[in-house]
Image 1 (cartoon, rainbow, N blue to C red):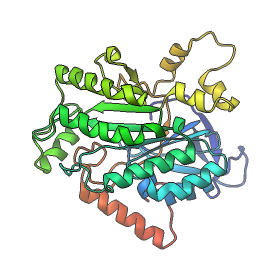
Image 2 (image 1 turned 30 degrees about the horizontal axis):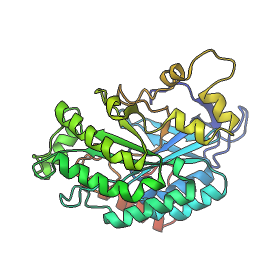
Image 3 (image 1 turned 60 degrees about the vertical axis):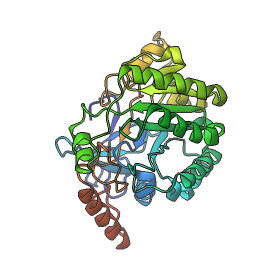
Image 4 (image 1 turned 90 degrees about the horizontal axis):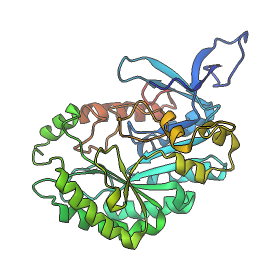
Length: 349
């Protein structure tokens, strides 16, 4: 947890209510973020939607640091935007509909890949069902608040640049009218030992990173496809400059998108673009850059409330799961506790 700019509050752990010093109840220190990410670390909409809704009622969650094991209470008292990340948000649609009806502000980042033939994402629904879900999410929250992510982009013995462009083209032709943004990211194997181990365990050593020339070849093909779609295309966390192909350095959690979609929320606007400050929008983006992400990532800072090794999708390239068996065990414990009516402050107790 590297960002130090969130307010800190004292809350009653029994009720989640913020209290003043001197309250008779025992109080705990909590951070109170304005933007909450749910979650880069696991698929909350697919697997832990009940947990999220119950904790939203309680007013806070606890987050366990994957680095030092510290437990950090996170209060929702200041939260203005929830950012949901998912590959299968269908189970969450009823809850999302209620959140939208109640005026909760949310953005949705829907990772919609096609690696069906390679069986790289064995735990998610068939592609056609995911495309239908994408359209439903768009109808609930609006196309401006739904981002299509194709992540990671990878090549292998069976996936060529032409194959990849054909698959993306097929998806884009079906969903471009339901969104305004596409965020892409090229697989980074060398940087993440966990990704290397997970791929090796599955016998998928043929998967590799793009060369610079392959990136440009892919970008050129994607640019041609986008002549029909008219999407804003952003490359996440990439060093290479693809602006010549109409692909900007970008971010998943975007200051521009948030200020466009939630401009009527003055509290949020004052945080993102404080009045009476001389800072330009670009300078403010640098000030609000999430320090917990890669150096080239332009995401606005948010507080993630997820937990590693709790997603059972089994994606072969995953960096957030150390072991599929461990993830399945954690999910099984969560489900058993939920059946007994136990919802812990954190995803796993």
